Length: 190
Image (cartoon, rainbow, N blue to C red; front, side, top):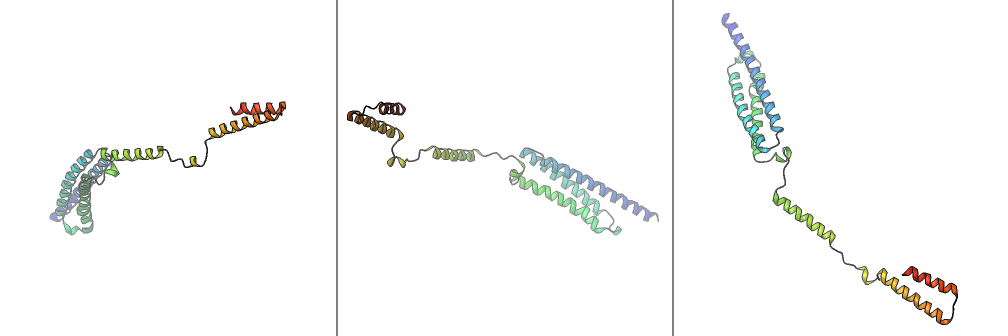
C-alpha cells in the first residue's frame, strides 16, 4: 500500500507542478503580449516579441515534459491534452507568428504611427500645388465679348447726358429746374 500512496502523492505533486508551471506560462505570455502592444517603436516591439518567443517556447517544452512524466491512468486525458499541449503550443505559435508578421511590417499600420515616406510626401505636395495652381489660374472671360465694362457704360452715359444738356441749352430751354437737374446728374456721375 505504501507504493500506491507514494504513486498518488507523486501524481498529486506532478499535477500541482503542472498547474503552477501553466499559470507561470500564462502570466509570462500575458505580460509579454501587453508589453509588445504598448510599445511605441517597431524595434522595441520586435525585441519584446523575440524575447517572448524564446521564453514561451522554453516554458512550453518544460510543461510538455511535465505532462509526459505524469501517470496517464488518473483520468482526465482531455484536460491534460488541453492544459499540457494545446494551450502552451497555441500561445507560443501565436507569439512566433506575430513576430514573423511584425518583422515584415504587416502590423505597422495597426500598432504604430506610420510616417509618410519622403517620396510619398513629395508626390502629395506636388498634387496639392497643382490643385492650387488650377484654382488660382484665371479663367477665360467669355462675357467680355458681349458686354461692356461698367466704367465704359458710365463714361458713355455721362457723355450722352452732356450732349443732351447742350442740345437743350441750344434749343433755348433755359428752365432753371432742368439745368439744376442736369448739374446734379453730372455731379452724381462724376
